[in-house]
Length: 126
Image (cartoon, rainbow, N blue to C red; front, side, top):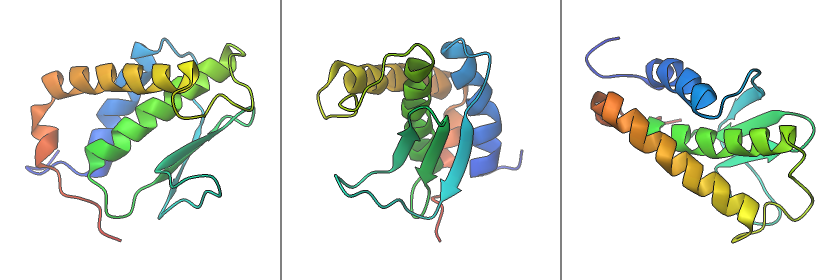
């Protein structure tokens, strides 16, 4: 890793950390997009139930913000594997959505303790 970590440097560390924290044996497909369109509300990430695909919008975001979104969506992936998701699971304030926020936040605290240097990364400008 060079002096200033890149998004890829951070992802290579964070993805296994997230998978281990969530006790995942498999990973979803992860697709990086410049931005994401959503008819319901603006979003930085999406998980497609049943398809096991995570979409991440990356333009003009700090790598750690993207990783936090990834952690959130990975929680949804685990919830899907446990058949916890339905049409209304993604509603703001739902127990499913709140769990994803809380677990992603805890994962980010662990990542920060182990790698405070990741805060020196530069935003992705596209």
